[in-house]
Length: 288
Ligand SMILES: [Mn+2]
Figure 1 (cartoon, helix red, strand yellow):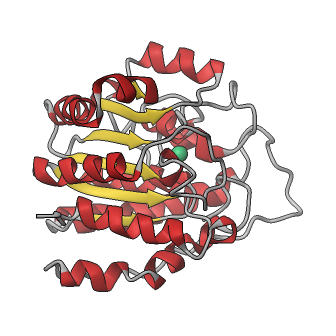
Figure 2: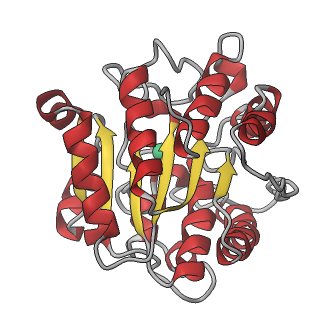
């Protein structure tokens, strides 16, 4: 999927992570891996007029409905569901699917951005910047009520980790919704260990599991150059790993995403390789 970012290349992210050996490395870690087929994404019809505030809404909704069904099935079977993106709009499907399977989930959104715009506040019209808001019940009804249900998460059970670039509209809406924003400044001050303890506690209170949605732009561009919307001053390699290791150790993780890897912007597949290593940490890989 690239439609949520409205920029090509990010749809090649899953292939780059497969090429970096995600499947083989998860097997080597001791997991049995069932690889689902790629979710088809329709090409937008250039003859139909677009709402510039909600670019490519219809094909994004259709693909997410299919993804939600897939994730719901896997989580219900007791599997740890790993979704590879693609731009961050795919989290609408993965998170709603996991929520459907478990009844209620907490959400940890690791991202440089808030992804908390809606059609009224978006500076770009790109739907990947609206998905967390939609999951929390804010925005266009076709996103908020993807499969007729929704909102899929309680905003008080959501933590955004690593934020450092919030638009004025989304800053206001995040506050109003009661989402816990654990910004880079907070990580600088308290350290990742303390911040992730809080995030995990918040996301696991009164829920039946945690979904983690990891946008590679959360990591500093030095280690993750292959992303579409880089912001300076991001997570170090070790901070990113520690977050994933702590999620694995919590025993609460039901599912996670790795999104926004864009091989066309990457350097020798470095960002895809980092995404794979982070996936392994979330799946229980430890240094010692
Ligand atoms: Mn994002």
